[in-house]
Length: 229
Image 1 (tube, helix red, strand yellow):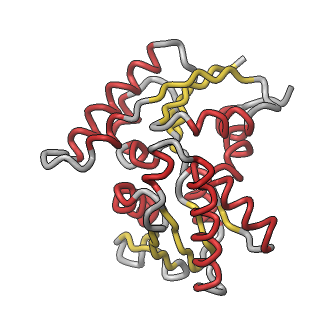
Image 2 (image 1 turned 90 degrees about the horizontal axis):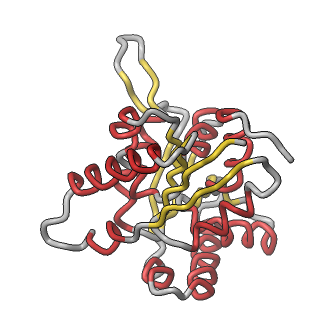
């Protein structure tokens, strides 16, 4: 049985991953560290701090007999390109399945966030994933894809203080408004914590909202060889 070490910034992500991967023969070991989210507004906070903490934790999880690591926080995932290469096991960011899908299906995407601190790094990952070479060998974002970021204000504070129901409702309303504001564009809920709200909008209003959770199981099946029970 494969063991996946799951690196979270908030405990609420544990249940989402457990439920999604329940049909599979996999051991999930969870590591939760809310520290970076608590420090990000400090005057001396920088990306260096993120790199150091993520690198340290990835090495620790790998040392604790993990066969692979799943990073569920988009703030942590923003530095994976550099730090994952230093770890002796596969490291998967929660947005990797979404990035793969966006490469596969070019179009106009609205990337919705609740945590403002993750926007810059995540959009850099998105733009890098969508890059293509031109006739001169230069990399550019594919002309067939257009991406814009939108933050749903006043929401992230709710989940960080434990008001999960309030967060779910606020994100659901925010995603619904964004989808109605941008008809014809594909709305993506960038963060794992937004996935239940995205699913609720799809059920209530028939508006499909992409989320990291929807594609995760199939992605892990393919890339880690997860087998169903």
